[in-house]
Image 1 (cartoon, rainbow, N blue to C red):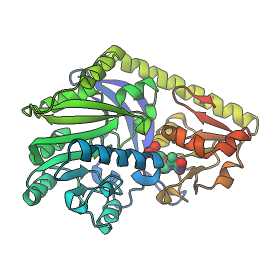
Image 2: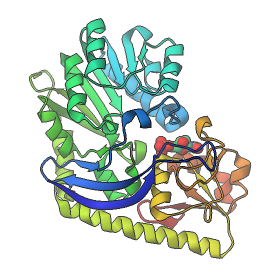
Image 3: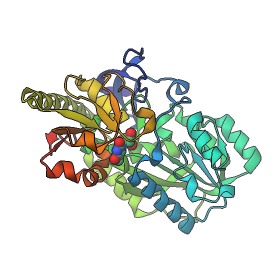
Image 4: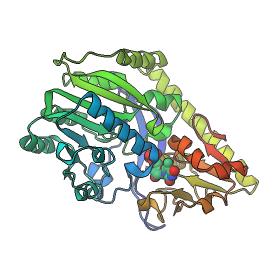
Length: 392
Ligand code: TMP
């Protein structure tokens, strides 16, 4: 049974940055549910994939040093530990992982044409397609079986999980390995980051829920690694149950134990998270109001999809935040969805003019604080809502 636990209100599509202030925008109600049987957390409203992942998708994985380093390190680990003959990446974005491999040994699948074009131009075979059974069959026909399938921050974006895993098991060799990574539900609840939820994040996985899904496809997790990426993610190493060559590591039972200890299998924990999110909203509004009462200026740093959830849930607009800065070319000179706050190209001159900065990209806090030492040294302050709204 699906039980409701949080209403994040009327929201625009999180990556639908507006070209013009007066552009029309689709809105939907963002409500979160916990399935008491499968333990899966999901959003209620499903926006068709073709609307979300179009030919102008703005998000670029290689935009931050943190992400580029993480994918480079993972590529080296994959080569060393698994030495795959052939790797398939589902949701290859701008090739941040593919680029670390030999062009003859990898292929990507990427539904957003603007992104698929980037890797194709670099000489990496990229299927400009959605990941489904049809795509999987096409790939199998050409490449036979694949011994490593990798997917980061993509599986949770696809509504039909049954088809996702059916399509994966269709191409994966008997001894093949599936590596997926996605934001961790445990981190999300511990940090009270309700902003992890938006139209593209249909699910936020716990390892408990993922294990239940995989079970239906005779797949099992044999190792788990926690990453700081995206505010806390889990990288799951998965194999077919019948493959006895790989032993199940203790990391799996340890993670499940941690999740059960926190109560991720119990509805009351989600109910509490819902209540905490409402408190977080009220506290953040108070902080913004107090700063504005003193006639101080606030700008936003990182025009993230997560920030869209926050701004629309808390009803924070241009009355509080003058503009956002972002390094992503496709977001610049556009407006934040819903709140319609202008996004400017990042320039340190803009940073040094303001009194306060709201951390939209709180998950890159370390990288940003390192970059903005000058701002901090002259007494500039950051505002974050993680784990509770505060000024730092
Ligand atoms: P994400 O949290 O969804 O990965 O998005 C991070 C956003 O923050 C992305 O639009 C790029 C932006 N960003 C900056 O503008 N400057 C930075 O220094 C970093 C790390 C990110």
